[in-house]
Image (cartoon, rainbow, N blue to C red; front, side, top):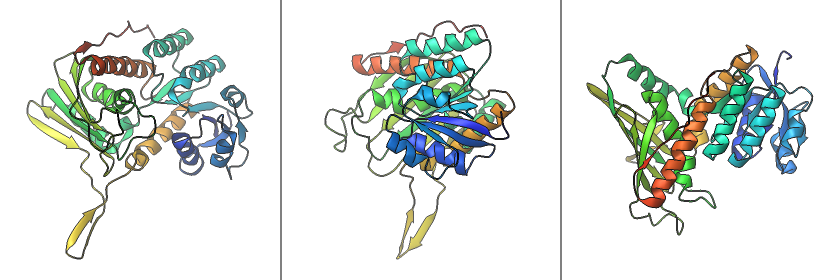
Length: 335
């Protein structure tokens, strides 16, 4: 490994292009060595102006490109399993965007493949663990000052859903962040899920069940509820309130610029997750680069990615059936 960590970025879409920019302009200790995307014109545009970067249509070619020391996977979820296994075969450290693998069977194969290596190679991109507000809430809950957590109340709103967004994706794409955040904040596995379906908003595309109300149960009796509303129309909002035996704590209230003029006041509302969690993404990728250069892997791992996939699948079944669905995790492989 040279002075700078050479990173191959797989995927040059909205998320991938932002990570390419981040590695090139924000993060220290790394450089973009290769970019892969089936749309090579898009890949070239994302990598424009970066010295020494090679562009490829296939992920495998990028992994084998000169100067590649590590991999950042930002391609669509269905491509993640193949890319992760290919990186493992080459011994390359990986930062993989969520979902690690959309289906739980594939996610378990990744867990088992890493276990066979006898060492960690992958960090999974649950960036809320790096958000300053979430980290403060985690530290407070871990301190025990508020007593045992009883409930988490969560809100997840988007301005609008992208084309072809499905009712299931409200859970396995949007709420997957709350699934991991709840497991991490509480230090507990989620054991069951129920999904309630209020009347859909007039702003939702035809046939999309939006909003939804998702209720999770945990192994030690806490409850987690999530209001997910992906066509709210006004902004991107993520909030979480922990209710404990001796108090409560809430994060996500906007602390942005307030403009007062003309007898009124206006407060900015983020319109995109890349804006709301920009600092968290920066810290996440910097932490990954720093750890990789030290020969370490930190942060959420493949088991966290697998657990999120299992819980999300149970949530989709609950959405479809209208009933409570238990979550069944496979035995965790020995490290």
